[in-house]
Length: 168
Image 1: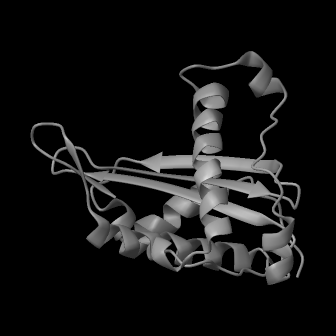
Image 2: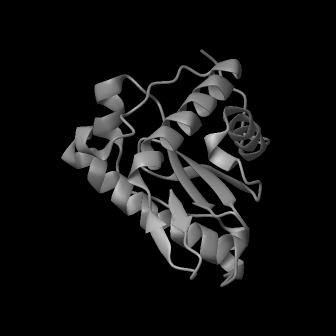
């Protein structure tokens, strides 16, 4: 979570970031459970994550940025639009440790200011090989943004609009 200062600079607000992360995590859990997925979570607080998970999340940040730039723009690669191929490497160990079949990566950006707040959520679903099987993203320009549970739920629902149904 970043606060946009009057001079245009951004200041990270870790005091509000964890609360926003928990809000998005809760909305995502609710929505995926309603679609018949069994959901397990990792800690939002980075200090409670394993080194392996931290490494995978760091790699996904780069992959996510590439997806956004080269599939959606502004630096679109036509091949990436027709042949969506992205991977973060093997997730087999992390998935086996938790009895899971897939991994959902979540990236949230919330920039707030009195003039123009913006929220953005992106999700990537990966299998045990680390291949990104599904990707969705959506944003909002409402002032309350991620800090309002109802707005967060609505934003997560928009991101998941074309997410496949699951089976328990």
